Image (cartoon, rainbow, N blue to C red):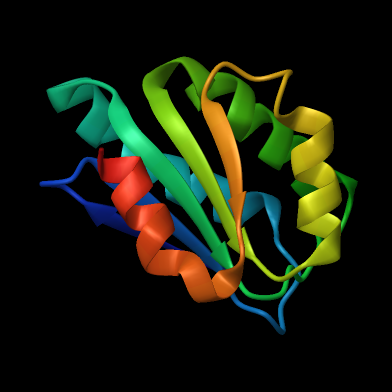
Length: 122
């Protein structure tokens, strides 16, 4: 399960996967259901933060493809992406995708969550 918090004033979405539950395709549909109406009404987001001290992974291939689809549909509507994590896997994933997507994607250690939030808001 993944929580999606929307900081409307800062125009930032924060995605928080539960550390003990693998991500589901439905998690990305729910996040889009929260984010999309805001984007449609007010325009692009300044940023998205993936706030995950540990990354639980995906439950199945459908969840992976839902995640990929979520990124593809939203990459032109987001200025920056902050991966805030101590997960080695997300660090590797960051190295793979940072040049393939439109937003500026940066990796922050989990202890630097506040720094990441400031970067997204700037």
